[in-house]
Length: 222
Image 1 (cartoon, rainbow, N blue to C red):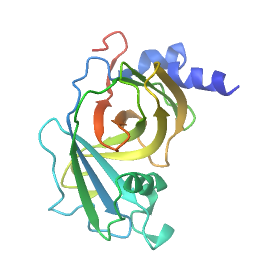
Image 2 (cartoon, rainbow, N blue to C red):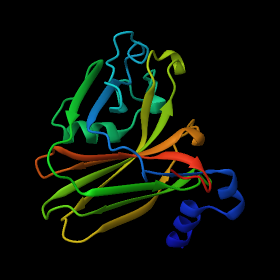
Image 3 (cartoon, one colour):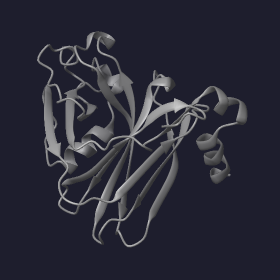
Image 4 (cartoon, one colour):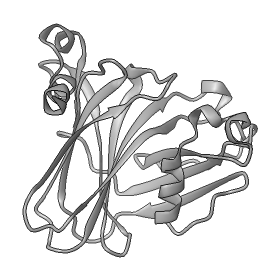
């Protein structure tokens, strides 16, 4: 049943697929620089702060909302997630009282990574990640469902890629990895703005590879 559900989510019905876009990392340039911005859900002014860190051109940007001490009463609680805490732990960082930025650059050889997303159905979307060609070792891949928000959204001075859901998987590099799963859409998410991002890390937690999906009309995938 779950496999059947995922197949529907990833491929969509013929009618839905014709109206939707094909979204994958195929033919997309591989980012080599990463900026991760963390905002505490308690900090109402941090989202629209004029000094929000900005990334260099063509860098990959991720925006995380960290749960605050006020819980559901925090001004940004609707977009906060425990995934942000997991990411901070992986980075060996504490949750910021207001906001923080972490920059990184891809280093060394990396596996080939491909990501793809399907058609949103009933608050779920099918996603997949493929890894192959990497040297044997302990690898970790983050598959992130992000919502691309234009500058000005809720007063933000910069465009953002708000992380809406996350999945982490391990890999030994010995044989190709293929993971497919459905990811739930958070309340208030605009499906047309959804994209996928993959971060591939080595055993030391260093970024070795990244990918992001883009959408093209059916039959015109780049």
